[in-house]
Length: 291
Ligand SMILES: Nc1ncnc2c1ncn2[C@@H]1O[C@H](COP(=O)(O)OP(=O)(O)OP(=O)(O)O)[C@@H](O)[C@H]1O
Image 1 (tube, helix red, strand yellow):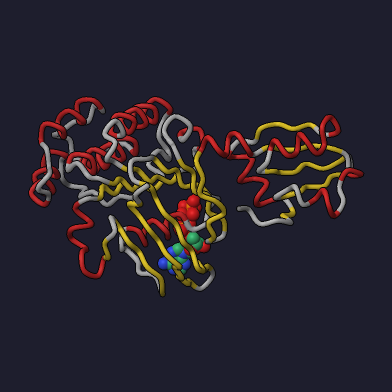
Image 2 (cartoon, helix red, strand yellow):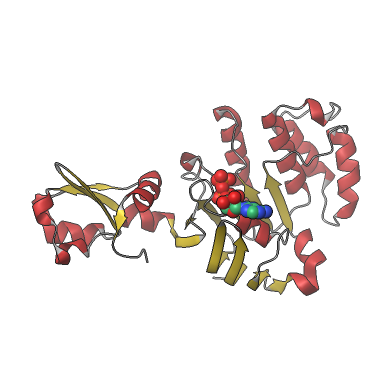
C-alpha cells in the first residue's frame, strides 16, 4: 500500500513536551483517525505534516516528497481543516472564495457552490458573524473545493451539534468514494470515527502507541475481568495493562482469542472499544508495550 504521509524518526522538543523517534505512515486511499488524550501531541504531529513547524531531526515525506524542495507542490495537494479562526473575518464566503480560488489550479467553482448549498452556508454573510459550526463547514468547503488528494483535519467536529457532525461525516464519506483520496483526522469524538475510519493511530505522551486497522482493533482488543488469584508473573504477560482493585482485576488485552483459550470460563471477556483502550493505556499499570 502506498503511503501518502511518512514521518521517520522524528524528534521535536518543547520545554515540557518531547516527541522522540516517532515514525508514522498514512496509507493512500483510506481514512485514518488520530486519537489521543489532551496534550498527547496530535496537533504537533499535524503541524509537522503541514510544515507549520519543523522537526529538530527526522524526515517528513508527503506524497513521497520533501518540504525543503517541493513545498508548493505538496501544499497544493493538501486540504487543511482545523479548529481556529484563521478565516478572514470581515469577508463574506463569496469574497473569501475569490481570494483563495486563483491560488489553486484545480479549484472547481461548481463543487464550491454544491458544497455551500448542501451545508446551507450563506455566501453573502460576513464570516465573523458565522457560528462555530458554520466556520468549520466553511473551512471544509474551502479545503474540498480545490480537490485535494489529502485532507488533514485537526478536530473538525469539535463543538459541532450532532446534526452538523453527521452532515460533515457524510460529506467525508462522499469524498472517499474517490479511491485516490486520503483523509487524516484527529478527534476526541470517538463515535465519529466508526462510520468512516479504516485505520486508527493512537498517540500517548508523544509516542505512537499503535497504528492499526479499525476492524483489527475491534476483533482483537478486549477487557478482561477476573479475580486477583489468576494473576502471576506468567499470566500478566497476556495483558497490555492491568488495573487491580479490592475485588479483582480489570485488564486490557490485544489478543481476545488467546485469553479465551488460556482462562476459559475463569474470566469475563468483553470486546474493548477505542475509549476503553485509551483509558486503560493511561490509567492501568502497563507491564507490556503495545505492539
Ligand atoms: N509552541 C509550543 N511551545 C511549547 N509547548 C508546546 C507548543 N506547542 C505545543 N506544546 C506542548 O506540546 C504538548 C502537545 O500539544 P498538542 O497541541 O500537540 O496536543 P494535542 O494532542 O493536540 O492536545 P488536545 O487534544 O488538547 O488538542 C502540550 O503539552 C503542549 O503544551
